Image (cartoon, rainbow, N blue to C red; front, side, top):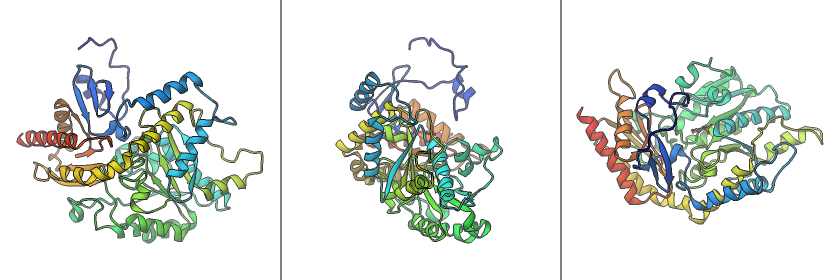
Length: 442
Ligand SMILES: Cc1ncc(COP(=O)(O)O)c(C=O)c1O
């Protein structure tokens, strides 16, 4: 290994135990297809698509070429009052991929910005309709909607909120949908739990009054808190209640977008059309930061028509909204997904992946396994008095053995690139099994 020519200390790492990491760093220096290369030259199989984003695998030449060409042609174009062709072309393509009449696209730079933008659009839309009193935003326990103030507020992860005053005031949360007592070891969508959506109508709406509620935001499949698969019928019920009471329904598809569950969007996998979809990650195959909100035509028209002509309709946006490098990366990624039929591939591989992950059922400390598409959660029994320790040690063991998994609490989350082979699925699951056996012994 070459000696490092940099210090570890000045970099304040996000969502990382800085002191623990810096005492035993894990550094990647290169990546290709299904593998990372560590600084000491080891190959590591990517079981998590980086951070749920590299859906077509790493360093794909066509994406690299598109970004290179763009940076040589035009590095930047102002996002406000100016445009460039790539941004329009990409919006048209996303409108074709999205379900129903979700056919207008607002660009941002991350999932967090997509969520905050969607929440702001919900408020602006109701106001434009003359219902500016609709300001309550409803999220869900164990939801992750990024790290901005809006996303943190509707999110339901206590540790992410604790130090920050819980942020936005007019927020409420549905209960989560994770009930292993009813649904442990479900394959695909669990049969039990559609009724959990009724809390919206039975508790939240009576408490706030529907006329004060702007929107409900959920991840169709909650990723970051450990792969919580929606019970059959649950999202359908949320949609029906939102329709009945005039609430906008936002699906946060930052993880589920771009084939993770098979079809392009989870909305299509479950057959429920939301009013807005937030995306990021797989949009550019993780290559260049980019996010977006895809909205129904009526939302765009409501906000735009409410303003006098020749005026800005929505006072919102970012310097890098629709950045040319990002739109080039996104166009090339979407073309690659289509050319290699990666969403269909994910759908076809899903049963093999499901059987492979469920083969870990008898491993020490495993108390639940769940899956949908090419995503799976393996939940371990927490070590008494030491929550998260078992899963984190499993993560470290796997890393030593050349496999990257992700853990959250005591749950292992798997979300490999959609190009993974059956042999690599076996390797991924085999290494996790070995690690669990070793951890189980001590
Ligand atoms: C569902 C969901 N929403 C939002 C975000 C935030 O995205 P970003 O980290 O790009 O801001 C994430 C990130 O994991 C996510 O999983």
